[in-house]
Image 1 (tube, helix red, strand yellow):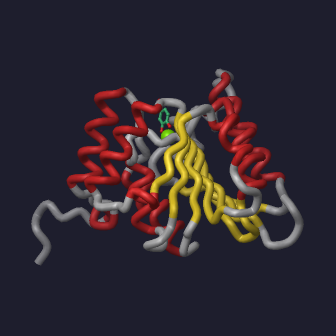
Image 2 (tube, rainbow, N blue to C red):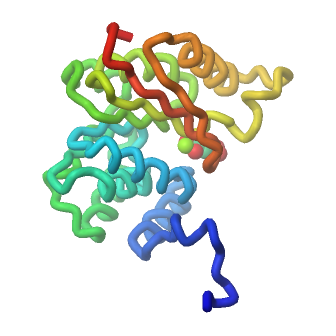
Length: 212
Ligand code: DHB
Ligand code: MG
């Protein structure tokens, strides 16, 4: 018999004390992590990709990073970029507490659009974007360059609290995410899906043919 509090969907997304501590740190410094459902989706993606190389835009306090590291191959390396070095210090605490070897998490502090051009073309299995919403289309262009054929790009906040689907919402973040969605939908070299987890996770596979 299941306990009275047993929740069918939550059994797949239960977070341990390390992730809960990372969420508490996020609260303290005022960053908003991914939902646990989004975390489970990202862990699944890294697992099916058997990912060795992942880029993350927006380290925060390491919630999404840890979910992904737990799906990646045991020797996989997460390269995670954030403009706030202090947040990355907290993310390293999260990875340490989880027993992740330090060489598996490469933190780079700086603006994503300054840092990403320095990373190697065609080298990455997954690019996860959760940084400045106004830069999402620019992140897509960088991700398509960084991904190997068959690699996957993913964007958090694709629904943006249901604002993206509401034409009366025209603020810069909402407009930018709407533009990103259009670029993904119109790109014949991408196989997209919008996963209704958390605030929406837009995922697209870069096809083997063509150069996206
Ligand atoms: C917010 C949520 C996010 O997931 C994010 O990446 C940035 C901001 C928010 O709700 O404000
Ligand atoms: Mg987000």
